[in-house]
Length: 314
Image (cartoon, rainbow, N blue to C red):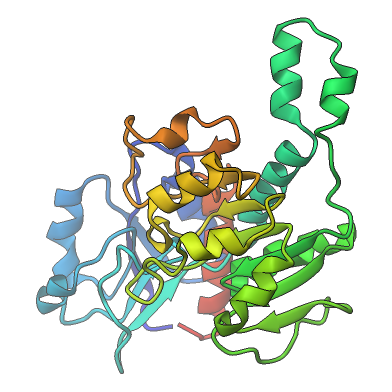
């Protein structure tokens, strides 16, 4: 462990689950014997203490701050991606990102799958009209059983989603840079592919789930031709980052029914502007970047971080 003291500044103005409180401080100290956790309540308090810090837990850290933190050995964040941590790991500096989000995000994705497949939106609409629309609703109902699911971005989160889909006997195709070894839970005909084989894979997909990180490599990785290659019965889910396609391409695919619907948790511009057509589309389910939210969010992060610290991995 690089230090026996950690400075914490984790507050969020909108989502209570993303705030680090007294209970989390006590939990982290109880899990790592001899560790002292100091919690900052505002940005000024944090910046005043930062020059003496050896380790921090934060949402945001700028590269320029390192100039005034000569003792810094560890920067940790609950976030899954490096969108707000500008620092790269160095010889004497570890940078740790949360890896616990998979199960939380999988719940949201699978919930959205059932939202579409079981026609819950239409059922709610008919309920408000007090209509026993058995015939109309039954024609919209489908099943997840043995569906062909493609997961674009097959890292920790993609794996967590796939593993939780296996009880439904879904056929999984994970897309990643390097195929590598297949997970132990894979069965025939599950597979790992690279993106260069996207056309054949997309043409055989019932559900396309995107879990890609942000950055130059993934910007506009999907375009009109990719949406057009999907079966018109395919549903699209994005729980990665909103830079991976142009919104107009997705809207066109949805309007023209080239795909059946979309669950969107992330967007290129957040908050999603009120002018966006996505708000008004009946075949779209929108959440405001909340797929990883849970009352246990911070507890899961603390437990994971403590385990890494105790194993001398940080």
